[in-house]
Image (tube, rainbow, N blue to C red):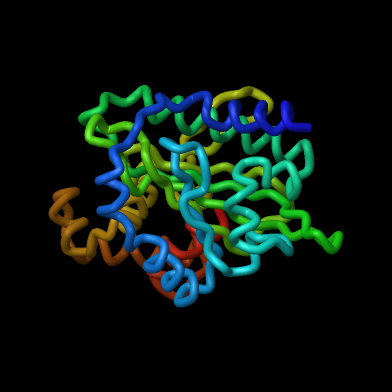
Length: 254
C-alpha cells in the first residue's frame, strides 16, 4: 500500500520542477492559513493550498465538503494519499491526466511570461459514510518562486452543476482565452460559447476580463451604442438578466 501511495504522489508532482523555498519565505506567508480559513467561511467554499516545494498540503480549510468525513488535520497528514481514499480509480486517473496537462502547459511558457491561469474540472468525492458528491474543483497558482516556478496553488471545491465527471476548462496566461480538453483525442480545444457569433465572443471575452462597455468600445474602436447592442444580444442568448450573471453562468457551468 505504501508503494502505491508513493507512486500516486510521484505522479502528481512529476511535472513539477522541484525547488526548495527558503524558510524565511514561509515565515512571510504565515498569515495565509488564518486568512483562507476566514475566506472559506465567508464564501462557503472548501479551500486548500498545495505546497509544490514540500509536496504536501500547506492548508486545508475546516469546511466539510472536501473532507469526506475526515478532519482537516487527517487530510493534511494523509497528503496526496487522501485522493486514493475519496476518488474512484477512473476519477483519480482523470485527475492525474489533467494535472499533467496543466503543469506541462505552465512550463511551456517562458518564466518571465508566466502568470496565474486556472484549471477547473468535476469529479466525485466519496464520503466515509458511503455517499458521493459531484464537485467542481478549481486550481490556480497563488505564489511563484523568484525563478517563476510554481510554489503554492489555491484549490476551491464547490458543488457541481454538471451531471458527470470531467468538464475540463482552463485558462493559461491570458484570461480572455478558455480551453477544454478532449480525453479521447488527448488534445486541448479552444472553448467558445456555441450560442454566440464571432463578434459576440470577442466582446464576451472582454466582459469576462472586467472591461466596461466604454472600455470595450475603445478597445475595438466601435461606438458605445454598438457595444450595448451586442451586450443585449449576449445576455439574451445566454438566458440571463445581465452581464454579471452571464459571466457567473460561464464560470459555474463550464
